[in-house]
Image (cartoon, rainbow, N blue to C red; front, side, top):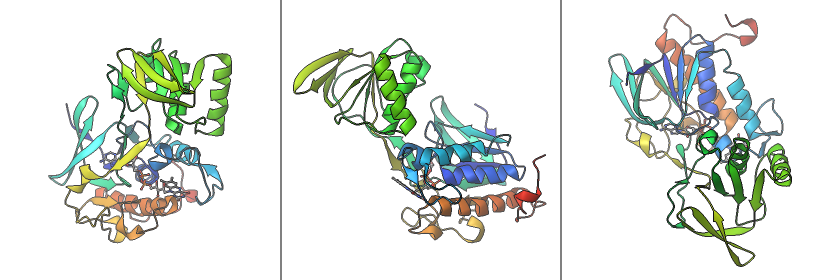
Length: 326
Ligand SMILES: Cc1cc2nc3c(=O)[nH]c(=O)nc-3n(C[C@H](O)[C@H](O)[C@H](O)COP(=O)(O)OP(=O)(O)OC[C@H]3O[C@@H](n4cnc5c(N)ncnc54)[C@H](O)[C@@H]3O)c2cc1C
């Protein structure tokens, strides 16, 4: 596969990475934004999309998913290519720039750029392992492309927002879905919970909760419901237990790591020339692991990255209110 080039590669599409991508692209550069997950938003999308955040400037009491939606919408019309399911595993010097080796579902891909912005937060948010007894040929810990499960009997196991969303998307795509969880309640945004109730009432989706999944066998799932054993035919089983952060792919990069932090100098500079850092992983933020702090660091790092790539462009971006996109 040929290398994918850009002016700036941003690793991590959480709030810091999204805002860094915005700023670099808004200054006119071409950006590739990589994330290990299947959707942007980092911790906000993976861990608490349904919870309201109160301390993002200008967006009082807004669900985390809406903060992400706004950050993504801000990329409209800019030269930002989002590469999801792309886990950065290697960072190496190449000529004047950098090479980022990644793992994708299609195999290994290499990205090259004169500047890299690191925004991996707490680490790649990878799905928790499915720990279920028994054997089944088709068990997933993340949502596959919903259309690929059309017509199949799918059991979705989990109470996290990701499970609610997966059940709705699969039912919409034409799968026969049963959503189950060991507790009676499910998490999700109010609109998603309303859609779940409506789909259940309309019979387009079944809900079985509280129920405990005891084991799997070929083509079936075995549960306990109200103390009674129950068997469901299941062609596919999704065990969705949320995500765990994994920084290990990046810990071998020569960034002078201080525990889980990368030391950041003025302008978000790291020990490596042309490699900048922002967000939770940047040491200067310390205990202030906050969206607002990450956004500010991203603006600073991205503008320094822009100047690094294009010395003819000033570090200072000027005021957006006095500019128009060309
Ligand atoms: C439950 C909870 C509630 C919170 N509430 C608030 C709040 O109310 N207000 C607030 O300001 N903050 C809150 N925070 C903190 C806030 O979510 C973080 O500060 C913020 O998400 C950090 O953004 P980030 O972009 O640095 O990293 P992250 O959001 O962690 O995003 C990093 C992204 O990089 C990806 N990534 C990592 N490594 C790799 C790799 N090697 N290859 C490819 N991709 C990679 C990850 O998959 C992830 O998507 C909360 C956090 C939690 C857990």
